[in-house]
Each structure stands twice: as C-alpha cells, then as structure tokens.
Length: 402
Image (cartoon, rainbow, N blue to C red):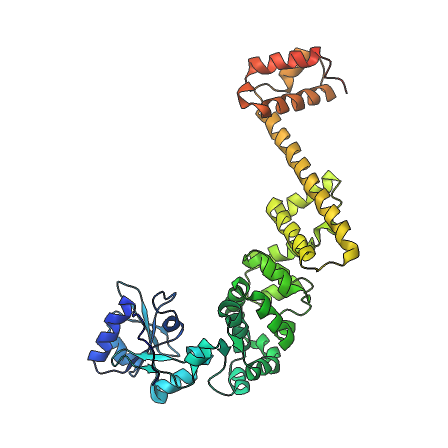
C-alpha cells in the first residue's frame, strides 16, 4: 500500500462510494480524476467488485453507457459517477490496463488506503512516463498509447522513459489503424499544451509524425509553440508540407475544418501568394479567406521569421512583402468603407447631377467620394442641407476637376 495523504472526495463520489461500501462491494477511486482530486474535469471513475447487473439493481437510476465494458453511470445532484466492474482480474488487473503507471493508482473508498502496484506515484513525482507492462507489449496492444505519451508530455510535462520512446517508434505506423475519433481529441489536447514543442519533437524523432502527418516540416515544433493556442492555427502550422486536407481528414477533423485548413495553407506563404501592391489581388484574398484568415497567414509567416524558419536571404524580402500587404489591406478596407458611406449618404447621384447640372460620369463619382470622406469625419454632417452646402463649396473651389 502507498503512504500518502487522502484525496479530497468530490461530493458525488462520497454518496455513491458510501452506498457501494454499505452493500459490501469493493470500491476504488481510479483514473485521471483521482490525480486531479479537488478539481476533477470529468466524471469520477470507480472500479467496483460487482457485476453491471448488481450495480443497476443497487442504483435504479443508473445508465449502462458502454455495454462491452459494462460501464455504468450513476447520476447524482452533484454530477455523474462512472462505475467500472473489475471482473475476475480484480483491482490490480484493472490498473494494469491503464495506459501509464501514473494513472494506475487507486484509492479505496472504505478503508481510505492507496494502492500503487506499479510505482506510478513515484513516476509522477519524477515526471517520468512508464507503462505498467513492458513498453513494447503495452504500446503494441494499443498503439494509440504512442500518441498519448506525447500528449502527456505536452500537457503534464511527463517524459517517456527510454523503453516507452522506443516502443513509440516500433509501433508508430500502426497508429493509422486507430479510429480517427480516438486520434482527434488526443491531437487537440497535445496542440493546446504548454509543452507542445517538446511533444511534437518527440513525435518527429520516434516516427509518429511521419505516420500521422507525412511531410510535416522540421521547424513545426518551434513554429507551433510560438503561435496562440488555437487548435486550427496550430494544426495548420503542424501540417505545412503535408497533403493537408487528406491528413486532417485521417486525423478525424470535421469537413468544415478540413476545408478551412486546406484553403489557408493553399495561400501559404501569403507573401508569395499574391502581389500585395495590387488591390485586386488583396480583394481576391479577402473574398477567399476574410480578414481573419489573412491575419492568421500573416501571423504564421511572421512566426516562421521569428523562429528562423525562413532563410536569411529571404527574410528581408518577406518582411517588406508583409508590410506591403498590410498597407494594401488597409487601403482596400478604406476604399470599401468609403463605398459603403456613399450608399448611406443623405443625397444620391441624381441629386448631385441636379445640383451640379452635369450628366452621369466621373464628376458624380468624385463628388460622392468627397462627400463620403467628409461625412466619415463627422457623421452629423450627413443631412441633405449640409451635404448640398458642402457640394456647392467643393464645386466652387474647383475640386471637382480630375
């Protein structure tokens, strides 16, 4: 038995645990929420020495949620509790099925004793990631554990030991047999982690990255880590160089996200994807990506610059191009704002032609542009009387000439 302080039991777990113990069942709190005692992020998990049928009889409102594994969820006012029958293997057999030793811990809800048959508590203190069984055997049984090892590194800072890292490489290609619905949440959590750079470097050197995202660039760990922790933006940075849409689909991302990623990277690097001094080119990019998409592409390119992902002889040209793009974007936005203002003016082109005694043509356009800019400076000017007065002044001053 492990000597360590008792965890704080969630209120939902206290009532369910007491009832299990009163009924004479062995009940052990296990899993990730035990490690996060005091602030669990999911339903607490209890390994129980009872059958699913016995649990359903003891808790009439319980719901069998995973028939193959006989998991039963008990709803309580304080939240749900998952009950998992341990079967003939007992609690140690259940813990041996955990991915890593640091979650292969259990706390008995009756005696308040700890069980740590694989030394997970010590591994956690040493920030070491090990498997309950020999790593090659354990990862071979469920290859997704290779990805989960990297996710633990990204989110918790737990570093795989030598045997586990070797097993990751040995079974990397078999990850493609893992259902996409299992891969995607692991990747999302990995990309959001503070240790994402170390985790992606681990995936690269073990060959897991080649299996999941063939063609990913060598600078991915540094670039991804330097970006804001937005899933799609970091995923795009990781998938540069890959067949992005195909890869994102294989990783389980939904069709809208796959399309956005494909569109974004189709225009990367943005400084080469358009001629920033040509407003028509900027407008085309705005139609395809919107301003938010352009900003993401610029941020991605700036991050590549900052992390040394661009050759020195290209860096200055890239900086100039990004600056020109920003200038062009602001110019197009101002022009579009003026166009919207023209449509909102309190007088229209017909009235302008009456007042200026002119026919349709450039003069009307220049008058509308001038009045729109004049109103932009003070929206209270947008009345027929004030606009006609300004139009007369503008015409008298000869400002209507080309």
